[in-house]
Length: 181
Image (spheres, rainbow, N blue to C red):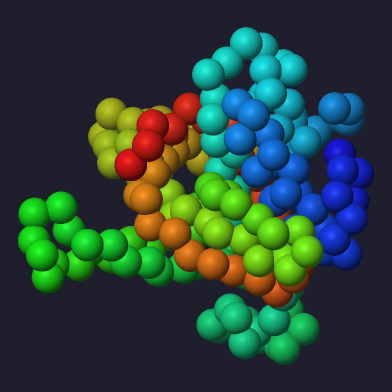
């Protein structure tokens, strides 16, 4: 899947989000084992039969103004992190907050480039340490840039609205089955 294959919004990020939204609602080619195209094919069941309903992703910021700590106004590469709020289940005036850099697209308007994203709570290694059992599994980066880790994602039901033209990149995780919040 290339930018604009199914949509032609003028924004690569917007086009990919629109494709993911289409396939999630209905729930390739290439050598990449970890790509948006691969995740969408998994969601569609084109790789193996699945009950996947989500392609989690991260967005890459375009400018320093949207990414604190970036070194120049033209810096592209900082992972976007958002905070959202919801009412607590047991308190009328109570509010819960979630901050995350992992998202699920809820809907997208390809004419305006606006998307509604649900924040996903992330727990690397399932909260149990480097090997998921509280012990270091010895599989550090070393000479290899690929490392294993467990990532547990949960839907929060907390949504934000973004202008997807404000981002220069999107990184998709493998498709997953995530129950509603």
